Length: 321
Image (cartoon, rainbow, N blue to C red):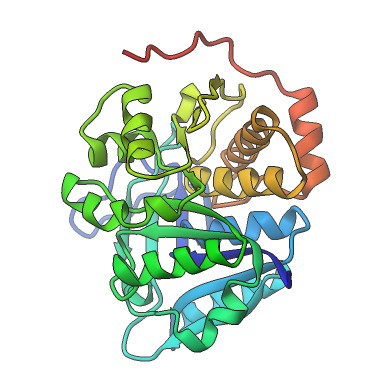
């Protein structure tokens, strides 16, 4: 196939600052130590991390006809990402965020949806977009023109053409499940955060949440659990918990998205399930060591070296009931 990885969905221009304890009142100014720009989003961060790992990546999404869009396309290309699948949406701005990173790494944000809700994949684009070993959809629930039936048809066609499909969401209410449920029968690996999984399913423990999505057609569910690591549950009965790496957290922006790319990298390199999740966890951890999505990730070998030299937290398996 032409590409190793097609990353479809949410691409955003981020301005991040740290540390931010409080927003200044009135017209006051607080001083911070660090400020940076990054391409983020469930598709954007994943595309860059996959490219850093040596994969041939196609980016598919939307940007506005504005300075932020120019910067996003230039930044993606600087990592070797093919941006020919990105669309200029002239009637909206580039999806953008102002991220206020807390001292503990949490990152409350102000976000403008913009072009993520305006792009669409047409029939004429399918031969390029789906000419990939792995097709990732990142940001279901945020893509107004693509959400629901259009995205389901895209993923169904990807499966028919022999691609592995992975899915992440931007969805936080039970009502969003209608947009996600039509995608699950065409999803090999569904990878929401535990908070998203709980909100969508109404289930609170990890195993019940994972089973909820498997029962609705997903082949495998991989839940990211933040500092508790990740939980993997496959339709063949395989399940395990993978502890997080023990690191000093700088910023958690993009951790889940980097996890998705690390998981794809594991599939690309033919790793077994546990080593694939461990590689994904390492990408998430490295991401958290710098300000801005992908900041701590250099390449595949660096990630492998990080796994060798960095201890995982000594955690009992999370309670599943």
